[in-house]
Length: 327
Image 1 (cartoon, rainbow, N blue to C red):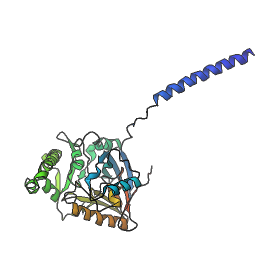
Image 2 (cartoon, one colour):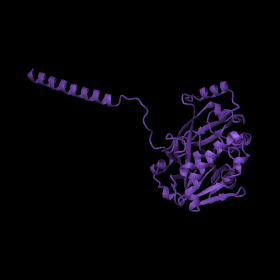
Image 3 (tube, rainbow, N blue to C red):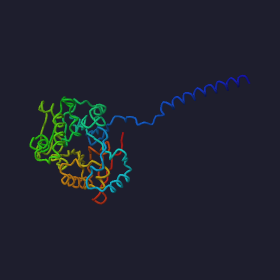
């Protein structure tokens, strides 16, 4: 009996001790506040090439920035996709690193500090993915909006010191020719000049080092990357295409900003389009091609990792099909 009592006491003490540990543990994990996600990179194999999607951050757009779409219709589309509207219409900012085995190319570079601290993670995510900025041989810029170009440098120092920048001549001239602003409406000039200042600051160290390669609209390719005109969002906007056997992967830049509104209603422009009519025409043409031929798409503003396919049942509305996660 004495042994039984002693055993019982020891068991109760142990249980009490475990309960105390459990309570203490529960207190340390009771917070439900959003924690920082894991590093934002995702590696996708395309033939013998490795494409690493890099997340710069998440941005939110006001629904009024999408043009010609009725407010009720927008609400119905967002509801259908269970899209959280609390902060606005969500869009990612992505860039893509292409490893050919002998060369390392970056397609777009993110916003860095040009839009606030909710963006600017591409440089660190590139390093987290197992690469070093000094290894990047070339940066291909779909266009020169700050959320694509600001990430190439920091405070006048090149982030990718060994890389050549590849920019379309039409795009380069539009933003950097001092005569462009004179052709704009008065109410657009201040915003344009503010954007130009950000572009100039980003390009400056590469200009100084003579590392900017401007390609003409007659250019077809550089190395294994083909140039694909996709004008409208900006005058010199380009998509870039990789081929492997019978497959193609296309970096489409900013021909689309929403995986919900602009897929259900691809005729919807966004206020950032320099030429909205041309931007819509480009989207309609390219969406139809990609839905028909099945190219893999890498998109700057679709939900991270921004890699997937475009599907259409009727040739009028479309659906974004993200890649299935693989490890």
